[in-house]
Length: 337
Length: 173
Image (cartoon, rainbow over all chains, first blue to last red; front, side, top):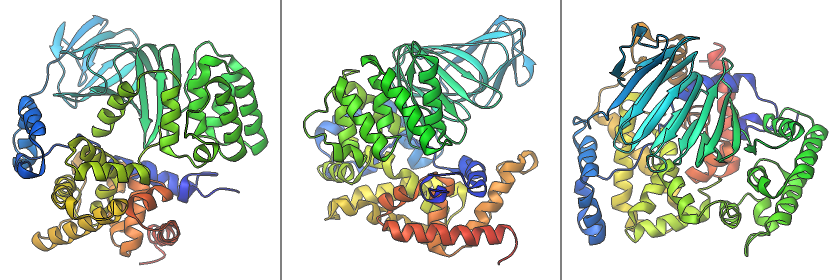
């Protein structure tokens, strides 16, 4: 067996380690936005920042949570409306319209549908046979968790303000329309209609544009995004690569399929693969991507071989998939959660 | 997108030393998981979130003293360890229980038991296992964030995991 799962998750998963990872994951750090108590301001930070902070009085209100630990921001309005059948909250049928409290599960059976509306954030239509919880809805941080089923989300809040957790990844909305499905096996699929969605699990990230989809799997996190009009063979090859369970020959063959079938618009897929394949395979992806979009100045083969973040970032910015500032806004807001 | 390598850390530290708050917020996002794991190796789960905040506050106040930006991870880890020791001195020992004991699912109870077992391991093993198994960091990430060498982290991970297996199977105390 090659690889060392305990060290870097390479090779075949050690069953004990994988079981402990699953068991202990709920105790992990829950990223949140850094908020600075008022007392730390003063001389260390320049006046423009003071002015900016004063302008955002809601943040100052939030700071008191850290200082005093007692005050709480009010819950932002989250309403649910019955669309069809008998949706339930905490196993009780919902009224025609009511609010959804934090920590409560909204469930639909095979004939029920419901609509969740978060004030100034968006609308989430919950399809039959779904289970959805409200985790948080305060300020600029609105989180739902889809345990199973399908939801269609139309989000109008700024990028990064809304996220949808699933058993195997968190989808961070970047101002868009998308459908999210989670199966009984906890495998998730996001299909983006407009805008962008970021998918994240334990530092593994995928960035999915309109027209593209991405599968997320338990213990593996988000897979490599692909456009819906790619061939079945292309998608099967990506699955082989993402699962990482195949032999070296099978993996090489899968990469061959992806490289041979890639079109200009598939640079999104190729860019993600740069950091997901190793050695000579990474070189081959490099060459294919370079054939569509040459690496910008300073982005060398060695830098990409070594997985240098600055090189990957720079090449992303050259792909013409969105402005740098737009991307930075997203990554910063996501990380701050 | 991969992010948070040594060059980025250095850039962010230098910016934060120039009082760039957004840069400090990015450092918090990059290193929060590491600080959380180091604290969880020592103090009660219910206190960890507040202590993470304390550690970053101390770091913010002392950041101008840091002369080698590339050493930020090790420096921050040191603040976290000291803060945990200080907290331990000031508070009575506590035992982590599941959030709602009566209704706690089996997994939650087991997780609490494993947490207690990891905390009884030698310190070096305790920290690396907490970062690997709880925080989901790989060995190279642990080395990158804590400032330890990859060799040390690898040894600690493998020896610690062996000891943890033994203790969970009841063959070592």
